[in-house]
Image 1 (cartoon, rainbow, N blue to C red):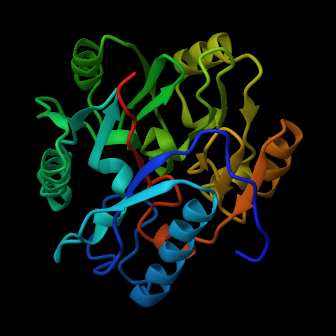
Image 2 (cartoon, rainbow, N blue to C red; image 1 turned 90 degrees about the vertical axis):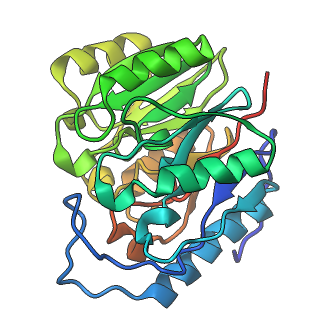
Length: 278
């Protein structure tokens, strides 16, 4: 990074996976197109810039070894959900990604974490986002609503089901960004057309002052952003969102993940937060 950025008040703990084997080998979301060439080295360079950004912000980054034949393993956020030090494993919908769940669960178990093998289909933090004391949970494309009930029973937290209706925003973290998880003042940004009418009503009720992302933000996958409560790492194309978060007192940090976008992921998809026990 050319300009130093002040670290957030609370250092975060992230898990990432270098895209050593990144390519678009299949099509399971609208962003994927096997006819479009991918540049693995460019993906690695962008990923390393993202990792280095977190390190310069004072955060801890752990690495899980990539496995050959799993090109989407770079999207670490999908690998599990970690709440209060407890790991809820991913159980992927598509066969191409199903081996990722056990790989991530083994990594956590090897590090001494208590892990829970999911009985229900879920794609980790792709659809399960912690906002203060609540977990916002997406469904409609990848994660079954039954997983929301399983997670609520496991964590004792309120889990709020949100239905996604636009296939381009197939995970919750492509349509909604957590800006502040402070229970006293939770803040989010989201893209209204990605949600069902009932889910929009719920979001408006819970977050009346949320930032509403523009079509341009959504098209850049700008909501696939990572916030430490002060700094928001996001796609350079999310110019409206960058200005909106700046106006709320956050510092937007554009990081190019355009090569990884060919697989349908940005900064958040590449970043799994490890939340310690309360």
